[in-house]
Amino acid sequence: MTLTWPTPAEPLKIGTRGSPLALAQAHETRARLAASFGLPPEAFEIVVIKVMGDAIQDRALKDIGGKGLFTREIEEALLEGAIDIAVHSMKDMPVDQPAGLTLDCYLPREDVRDAFVSLTARGLTDLPQGAVLGSSSLRRRAQVALRRPDLQLVEFRGNVQTRMKKLGDGVAHATFLAMAGLNRLGMADVPRTAIAPEEMLPALAQGAIGIERRLDDPRTEALLAAIHDRDTGLRLAAERAFLKTLDGSCQTPIAGLALLGDGLWLRGEILRPDGSAAIAGERRGPATDGAAMGDDLARELLAKAGPGFFG
Image (tube, rainbow, N blue to C red):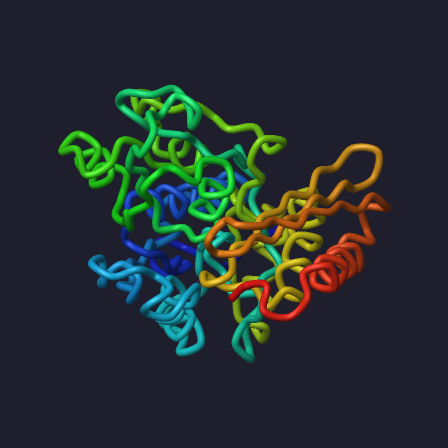
């Protein structure tokens, strides 16, 4: 393909949050685009956009608005033309995009597992009775409460460095991070134990990077098509359909994971926020039927849960 854009003089503008992990994801996107088209890094400009979720660190996410807290300002910049694409952690993304925007490009998915992180314990079962575990994720809190109702659960936000300092200061004995984030940041020194999905299902779309664009921008669409990972797209179609039918938000504890092999295998779980109950199920079928499978599984779990399950 012969390109007249982007160039160092007229770069493609990549919008992102300013956290170390978000910047690592934006740099990965830039590197993949540059390599695909033989372009210098200077043909791509990374634009940092401050979002409400990063600006407010002293309150729980559920108290200030949910998933859109990490995307709204970036999407507004995309619609206004201040940036050409937006790079997102897919587990932060609402299932519906604003009119005029679309998500149809995903990078190869990283490790989907949660990481148990502690300076004193190797895993959840090693924590002493009544120990304090910090997490801002309702899903993780509910999953922990289901397994260890004796533990004290406290709100725990901030980047990796902030959370590790809190552990060192004794604010909590343990927390959870995403293996994908630790891997992308090269943080091999963080004491962690990866938790198998069979033991604790991760957040839907965990480990996946999505790239959002304007619908009326064919030249950007052509660029992104070159770096789209089809397998990740198939898996996320199932996971996000499951989430959409459940009307999932940061205020509903939902977990799930789709895997490809001989077709697609989708597992899903919903939990009461206090961890007093969980309902799980699965579907297997052709990979191209993922969205229908996700919707069908969600309807089954909702029917089993009945009204008021999420409190």
